[in-house]
Length: 164
Length: 463
Image (tube, rainbow over all chains, first blue to last red; front, side, top):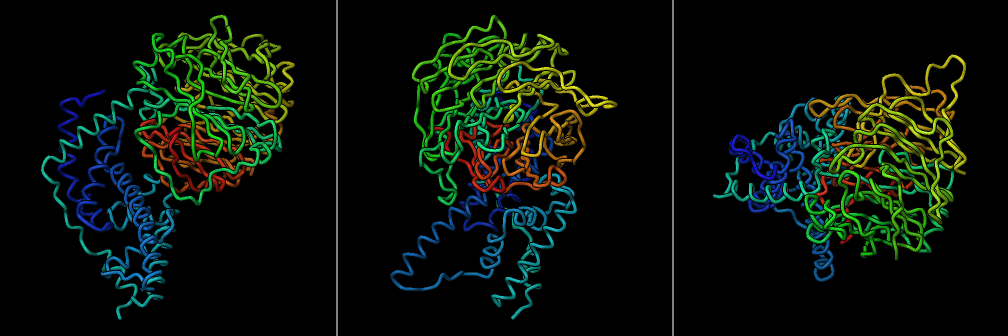
């Protein structure tokens, strides 16, 4: 099992060609630049291919990995931003400025708790149906629906409060 | 100013623009995946059975100390609760656990050995066992120093290498795969061979078992209990193809092992079935592959079949066979645990297409009668069940960790940075702190919770 069988490789390459562009594009909307998007997409595929023969739904697995990697990236970036903000506040006192509306919405999504953010991204962003998201997250469909509703409500409320 | 609703919908409605891969990306990804797979396979069992493709790589393992008060033992299928000799808070000599607020640690891929088994004797002090070489090289007698043992006294914040038994990885009748400590001095390495230390690991002594294999071991109070089984499994499937189980016990501070079963002397079982050992504050339980639960006092006086109340059919729910052994020797079909209100038994169905039926039963009378209390989420394959001193139940699956605060009636997924293949083991050291071992050892980390299991973060295992 140390190497791919020819048929496995062909199937993996087919999935890669079919899914990579959309996955990387999906990640790109959630991170800051193309390089980071490629890095995360490639890492997700690396982990997928490492477990290739034992997966019954590779695409779900792929997006789950990518979602976790994006979350990790956000955390790292958040720490850097906080550090930068501290330095900036000490010297200038300037508030952090988001360069685009897209980033504002994204920042709000980042602020959602994991419980709400995961189904939100997988459903509204990656395009998985409620049933698929429920299976991926191991939650009842009703719970996923409720989480999606709550996530949207929170985002709308936050957007309303900020007047964005 | 746009309406919030419109803005959100607009944002969500923007189609994803495909991002084409740079040239050579697939080849690079394939190479990295091969390296990752090779590392993983290193720990896979040639005979690791189908319990799972997911765990094919991991020898899940762990131990967890039981909470000091209330007589709870961690009841995961994989390990037993080794109760710390003193209350967890007092047992750490003033050394606080690593603060969860320190930020999510990142697994140290290069330096930490893949974790096989973990044990804690309080919130601060624990050991993690790993292999310094791939399984194909580590399970040979010619590699006696292959087992690596690292210790933390800071709740996982930092680790240092300590003396390990001069053993290789599990290979049929020889080697070790699991670690348990009852105190900072008394510890055991087992699965299938048995080694003991009574001086904090400075020296290890092999315990003669007469050819029997030690498939489970737990320590609590002043004694240690172990399941000695007659098995024919090969490779890392050391606990498979077993035909008889005997519980042995010894004072924790010595190696005076003697049978702790009164009747029958040896519990027969169908070939391929595994047995589970669970210690609570006062009682030792053995769940054999077939037949009723056996129980005996922690004094080591002897285990006997639990007497059923008149009219009760059996001490176990119907259709709940223990099933074949997981790579760590624990049953895959029936996961036994305990929490303050009693015993819990998760009966699993056949795993198919990433789903598995998981029915939970509870007993408030020491296993005499059982009641169905709930159904855990079907997604994922169940590997380990643990009771918390808080009364919560935690279930490690191939998807992550599920937590129930109401005895199994409802479950919610734990948050945090979950490993892709889920967890092979979960156990709570205290009501707040717990540890979990990923099913994929390539993660090179173990996971900690400091909020009762609600969220988990990785920590380099021995880096």
